[in-house]
Amino acid sequence: MSEHKFKTTNIKGKEYVEVNERIKYFRTAPQYKGWSLNTELVDFNSEACIMKAEIRDDQWVLRATGYAQEDKSSSYINKTSYVENCETSAWGRALANLGIGIDTSIASSNEVSMAVAKQKNTAPKTQAKKTPKAPSLYEKAVEKLTEKPTQEYYDQIMSKAGDKFTAAEKKKLKALVK
Image (cartoon, rainbow, N blue to C red):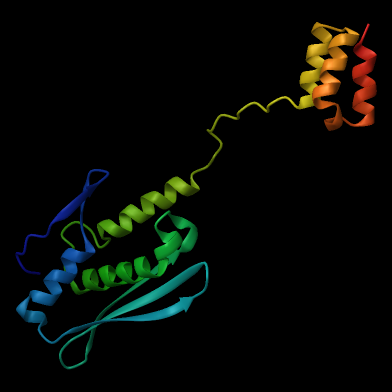
């Protein structure tokens, strides 16, 4: 590994090298002249993909690989770009496996950001407060007629929303009138 200082991104207190930084270094460092970074689509469907990136030297000897999987539903950006994100992640892992940009972690900032977003999207919903169910039109009518059980009030309710009640509901509402 060289003494190159990579630009990093801080995620949850830890520094991660971005994939574009790894690629720039790979494309410009003299020791990698003539080397290639290739991507193979291993599995693909409308919901997910898996890619393999390979790094080969100038003699076409395989020097490193990296795999990645992306799910279309895992984040907002993946709704339209899960294939592209998968390729970027595979490149980042292959370059890390070659030893580029791994001062603090094999994972790139892109991978960590996606993992954090995925955790937020799949976090258990048990802590969320349940919002109370809004009362139905019938329940509102019962409440109003209980407060003011007159024929006049019943007629007003029926003229405004009578067609929205079932025959049984109308009968129960009528029974509230005194």
